[in-house]
Length: 610
Ligand code: AGP
Image (cartoon, rainbow, N blue to C red; front, side, top):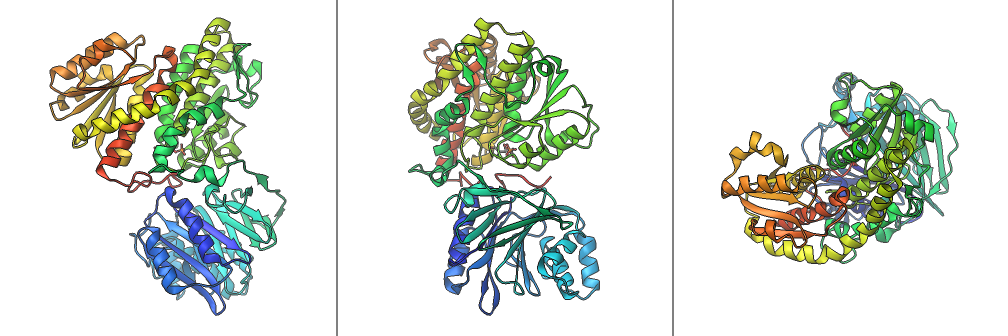
């Protein structure tokens, strides 16, 4: 989704804004622009396409000034074009915006009737004219922004500069994310933390309904109604190096290889191996609460939703608590039954996905307790939740989520064990065995990563021209099959379906012929024999079989056209190892085809529109 950056200080603003935008590229965009205060007034430079086009335009134009705002646009209203790119100028103000103004058509008609000329098709330009109209009425910059925002419905994070008050950037937010950064002599804003990491790790999260005035020596926050808000910066532990490629060809590959570390950091201090228990006060439940939970509802989107399906299987088996998974976008507005006694676990890498955020808010309003599982400290979902159980995967830059998925699995499994121990549904022996196994997973993944990558790189040439791919799994391998298919679709643009292996004969088997590779997840668990029968059924239709098998499983491997081995684990832990070859398969196919792996077309890292 759109990315915003802002800078006010003593350095040249344009290079800082461009650098910040580069660090936000992963959010997805199709045009970009900056506005800088120069001596004669505000100048804007905008370009369609990749940031290198903006960079060329900037070097031709040579903007000079120490206050400015920048934007990467992911088109919603109006096609990607220079005129639709942000910033949008109206009178003395320039505005960048992330979000959607829902009543923009009505406001456009009103502004046009009042003599304002609107150049673009965007909803954002409406905001700049609304602010301008208030300035014409004699208000200062902040008051004009407040009064303008009072007229809009929808989601926004905006940053504004004005020729009338040239040493300020003013920002405001409702629903869309915005973080401020503070360093000596400079203040920054951005849609996301990685944009600011090279400059500061002292950050402040703006809340909905707040406005902040940024000046070189600090910031002042107030509500839209004008009440001052006091908030101190917090130190973010991520380092700028964590958001670099570190010699890997793509962020996605780096993040796949970082999974052992991400998992170790997420498990650190939370596994009590001697006591056969999980140590976490973070879930915010007392022992009595844990026993009294009537039901768990797992809310998420996309990859995070796939993690919750594994979470459901663990919660039901281990904690014996009725659990459902809900696509957050489908949960809202259908009058789902939710209320007291329900524990709603909202799972989100970014912590900002609007569907998950709004669904969790709806559940909270109806009396459910909300537990957030998120990777970004202080993001919107943890902020609205009753408790937060963070994953510690570090910043994830590739649009296709990998290491955060792995860390989400870990948290969902730890939550299941924690609840199971409190509800008396898991013995010390069982818990001990599982915890021991979980603690060994980072090492098992690490040991096999390089070889798995090599095996898959060698095999993809044979399969990469396939137009359709089917992924099959049973039990805990089913959500991994869904995830494998999503990864392949996202970055290689190959049509793929994840299916419960037992469902294949109820429909998708009709698709099979010698042109369709079928990736079968066949770890040696309780479903093994039946999955092998499904594999045989696909083989009988001449499909090409790629097996994900336990190491040394010669019997299944003999039935496959190609196979990858995974380390044998406790059967409840198989998702941690089986998903890795699927991520690598998607990566290698995409790399073979030469697609834009880290910024696939049409996708955004953080989805802040409904
Ligand atoms: C993952 O590869 C996807 N890009 C996407 O499905 C993502 O998982 C989804 O948008 C949810 O994001 P979140 O975890 O930040 O809420």
